[in-house]
Image (cartoon, rainbow, N blue to C red):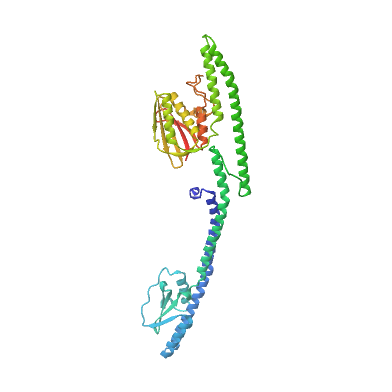
Length: 437
C-alpha cells in the first residue's frame, strides 16, 4: 500500500528522504514554540492588560466625584496604556463563545484573577484589530477597547516566515544538487537501454560520483566484450560458411554431371538441405546488428510483409488489420525479417493468417494469429531455443531448420521488446511481438 504512494524515480525518493526529516523537525519546532514560548508570551501580555484594566477601574473609583479630572485621567490612560475606556449604562453581557482562541483564553484567565467571571465579557473584534472587555461595575457598564498589539507579538509571524523561508531555500538548494547527482545515473540507464536495443551509444562517458563512474566504466567494458564476442562469432561462422560453400558447390556440379541413377535425387536433396542449413546458421549468427535504426512506419512495413507472403503463396488467406500509421525507430530490414519468419511459420501449418496491430501507451503489439494445429503449452518455450523443431522429419518444407522463431525473438529483443506465444482466437497459435514506443 505504501509503495503505491511513494515516488518511483531516484530523484523523487531522494527528495522525499530529505524532505521528511526537515518537515518533521519544523513541525516539532513549531509545536514547541506555540505550546511553550507563545503560550507563556500570550499569558504575560494578557496579565499586563488585566493589570491596566484593574488600574482603570481603580481610577474610576477614586475620581468618581470629579468628572473633569476623570476625563483627563482617562485621556492619560489612553495615551500611556493604549486602552480606550467608555462608561455607559448597565447592560446585559453577551454570552461567552465556546471557541475563543489562544489570545482570548489567556486574557480570560488573567481577568479571572482580578474580577468575577460573571461580571465581565470579552468580545473579539479581530477585523478591527482589537478586543472589547465589558465589565459591570457600580459606575455602570465599562467598555475597554484593547488593541491587538497589546495582546499579540510579531515574533510568531517572524518565526513562521523564518522557518518556512529557510526550509524552502535549503530544500531548493538540495533539490538542485540531487538533480545534478541523478543526471549521470539517468544517462547510464539511457545508454544501457539504447545498447540493449542494438543502437550505437555515442558520446557516453563516465561522470558523477565515484560509484556511478565505476558503474559506467563497468558498462563500457561489458559493451566492448559483448561487441567483440559478437564480431568474433560472426566472423568465425562467416568463414565456416564460406569454406563449406566451396565443396558444396563442387558437389552440386558433380551431381549435375552424373547420369540419372538410383539415389541421385536423394543425394541432391541432401546437398540442398545442407546448403539451406548453412544459410540458416549464418543468418542466426550474423543477425542484423550492423543495421542503423531509422524512423519508419510499422503499418506500412507489415503491408510489405503481407504482400511478399501473398506473392510466394496466394493459395492461403492473409488478413491485415489495424495497419494505421505508426512511426517508430526501427531497424527496418531486421524487423521485416522477424515478421517474415513469423508469417512464414504460420503459413507453413495454417490456411488462414490474421495480422493485427495494437497501439498501447508505452508499447506496440503485433499479433499474428493462425488456424493451424498450434504449439502445445509445454513446448512453447522449447521452440524458441535454437535448432529445436517440433517436426521430427528432415524435410525442410515441413520441419524447417529450427531457427525461425529464435531469430524473430532475438530481433524483437534487440529492439527492446519480446516475442510471446499464446492461443489464437482462430484456433491455432498466436505470436505476439511487443515493441516499445
